[in-house]
Amino acid sequence: MRATMKLKQGSFLWYLYLDKLYCLLSVRNVKALLEYFHLLDVHHNNTLNDVLFYHFLHHVTSWKRTQIMVVFNMLDWNATGEIGFDQFYMLVCILLAQQNHLEEQFIFRHSRPVFELLDLDGELRIGPDNFHMYNFLFNIKKQDLKELYHDFDITGDRRLNYKEFKLFTIFTMDKYQERQKAEKDEEKGKKDLLKKKRLHQVNVNLKQFLGINVSESRI
Amino acid sequence: MEEKPYKASLGSHGSDISSPDNDIRNLWTRATLSQPNLNVPRSRVGEDSDVEGSSSGTKSRRWYNQKAPRDSLDGEDKDSFRQEDLNEPSLLELELRRAGSLGSRLEEEEDVDSKPDTEISSSESSSLNILKHTPHRAYWMEQQNRLPLPLMELMENEALEILTKALRSYRSGIGRDHFLTKQLHGCIEGLKRRRSKRLNILGH
Image (cartoon, rainbow over all chains, first blue to last red; front, side, top):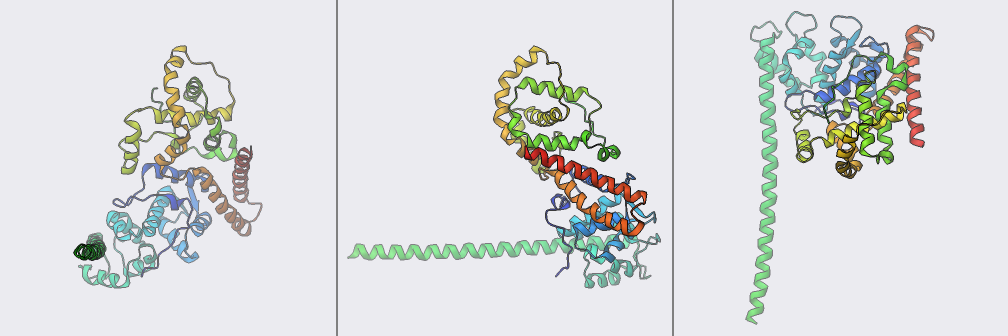
């Protein structure tokens, strides 16, 4: 069971639509988001400082203070103490991906920016600690995390470079699609079973009806 | 009806909060609220949209009234357009422009010279069609934007809540007299003024 973050129902972000295939917002939605960003950008620097950022995320998500500040530090990778619209947009896409259970798809589609976000030290390698720290963003299961370093750490340095990370995203995407397919098949199976039951019931009713009619005509 | 250039200047946000009267977002809200007054002749619509086009100083960020491109990424949007656009390609655009222009008239209250007679006479026949669709204008806009109708209201109310909480943090963190606190306080006041204006219009 996933411990997912919930977006506040009825909040502005809640109405935005993340494309399920590309995991991006439409241009129209981005424009609306930009308006929203400008409303929060009270100091007219085209940025949000940590206080505004905290109150924004505290208002729209169920994240705790520590989680919010971890996200802020991740987005503010050059330590300016503020985040711009690009980072804000990225964050909103992550939030919406999580809200819609599209984490695997999101990581797969945006593997490069996600890798760069997770690569805090800029060493072009991600250690397991970083993954663990940001796990609440992408909901990678513990088992998957173990497998990730066991199966994809080809260089054997206990850290993933981009190619290894990309392989992982392809692998998780495959697993995600298989899961989706299995769910669909299961649903289809249930529907077929229901259909058969209904058909059987109709047949029984028909036989009963015909049986009564035949006996009546004999009389 | 010819296409007017899209005049959005998304970056220029600075003056909006300080001068709420000039804010285009108010116009949109008022335009939505003034639906009972929409039964105006086609000629007036032409005038107003002309005003809008000619006054280069007004205003920007009317993206929510813009007609979406046909090659929009949203498949559902495409479908919704197809139904309307097959018969009258410019009708939707006209409706949307009209919504904006009525709003701008509410805001500006300007008298403008009337359009040439030719346009008035040519528009007589289509005015009936427009009126027929008027009650659905709001629905159309919602469909196009795929966002809730009182969007700016929603955004501003939410921003107000967030900023009010932030103001408390500012006051406790850097003090009441810090210029950042004052700036934030000014923004909140601006948003509150805008909201009360909106509510006043709703009351009328």
